[in-house]
Image (cartoon, rainbow, N blue to C red; front, side, top):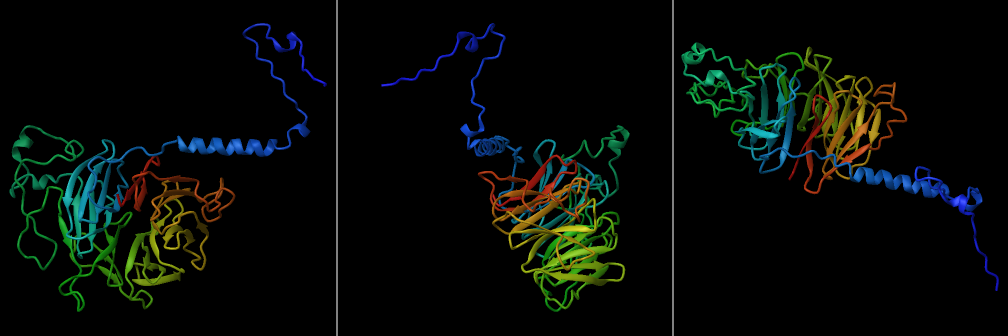
Length: 424
């Protein structure tokens, strides 16, 4: 029998002091390690997975949530704190992001709230539309005119020199009397009292037609102009309506959408072109409108219906849509014949899409209970010319155990957080 023994000198294995590094022995011959590259790759992938698992991107939930599915959400363009969300039970809730709590709960509509949008001013006005055929104007700050009688402002507060701003009264209910107001609807001649100091301050309805004398047309989407005082709505009468907040009837109507009678589901103003509108409809179409001439510009038809549409805030000729075929697409409005990018990964219909304020990425919410973030710009390039950094695969995926089908997502204006509303 032959026995082989390994022996090393004590000087080669012992440290001279406790501050020296420990001596390790390793065979550096590559022939002794045939699987070194595969082993290191496996270790790197495992480390990346563990890093994602312990990242915990979920920050928290807003206290006092809805009792039913959150169907829509609006983020203020001029302020970081206020956010409003709409529920399928007809309620609208105003939130304070800094405190992460509800400010007020408004009984806005008798049916599902289908759209919310903030105005472009600093007075905190926002609009909600519902499936019962009404658009209502609200305020996130309690209106001072409803805190007093019809004679005007409270004289006591003026004498005391109380010059508290709207921010100090944010979410506080007034103790004084409310004033009656007249609805903007011509059919209602009597004076009504607002439901709360937050509104509604105006109510808008479509004029009755042969098909909606009693029920009215349901509104499915609403969007406010980026600079002018007007907003647009999409309704079930296959039309896009433009509204002036000071008038009770639409100032313009697009009712001939390329001969299609299908419902318009989404409408969005272009952030740079003042007179450009984009819409999605149930006939699988995406169309552009010119509000100056009240004419349709061009339209493209996809294989399946698009559920959402958003313009790129930094490159306004680009927009993204979320489709029923589980994918998101980016388009150049100058060439609608084909998308500039296709972004895969969801295993359910894409219900919502939102661009980051930098215009370099967008986030999608899907029926598969996940939120995915896609990068669309190559370093030094543009969103229209995607490169190696835009592979069409999500760079990150967010989901929690409780989160259900995601109906709305949005970036905060400071590009630090993502808000989502789901079916839980």
